[in-house]
Image (cartoon, rainbow, N blue to C red; front, side, top):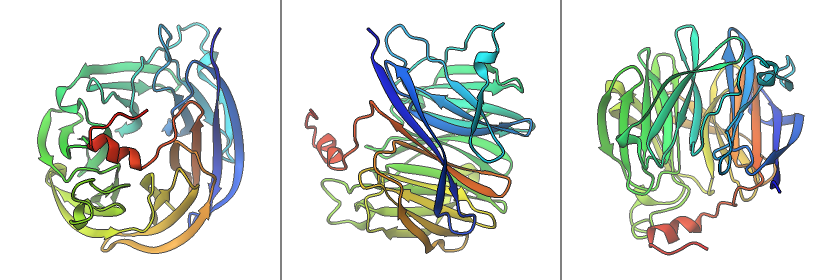
Length: 338
């Protein structure tokens, strides 16, 4: 008998000036087999917006078939488009993906998948009829055990950034080229994101918990540390513009777009509390624009805009084990987690 699970996905409309969640415009409960959907991503092809849902693992001997939905003009989920292709076999993306993102190159949009266990990176071109065309797939040893993976743009070119949270090992690759360098950062970063605005690219790094041995002594290892840098030299060099300790244990920290500015979304998976901070290009982090609660348990958040209107997709993968910050201490100490 198949294991039936429920993945909840909501789409929330945000205030375009403060990022406040003002209403939930869509709420779906997806009944799925073996494993719940893990990731929800927004992307645009030929001017049309879509939402992409993917499982990390489909289960033994199961094909991992994503669901792709058109978005309505009000931001709600529209029709499921990929089953309409009855003349084509359903795509199987494989399992083990720890990150999914979309990349625009010229007038084409690509799906990028990363598997931190194997180092595999796969690129699929998204076609106007919603099909996914495999362009590249290979296991890259440098991206093995890089549990944080992010795309960024620098001076018109695209790059991959991989980071090992426990060791602080970072690697940088050009999308249309090879390796450009590697670095060793302080260990413990649990969130990473990039933003390009007005010709400058910024990197966000956040630590949900401190280093178990040095966190109480050195500020750079403490829980709540948020660091934002303006990068240069293809991302290898950076100028630190903000470095501070925030008071809460945020499980998510990432950039997003408002109508006339950019902001940082912070969310606590255990409490449901969220905070929106203004992003300032010179100072890094500005004032608190809004604080509120959207409920605990969301395992994936995806902010995006349609026109000038910002939205937030929240996803709760039912079979996802709740994240507790003290588990990182146990991992660092080599203790078994039950």
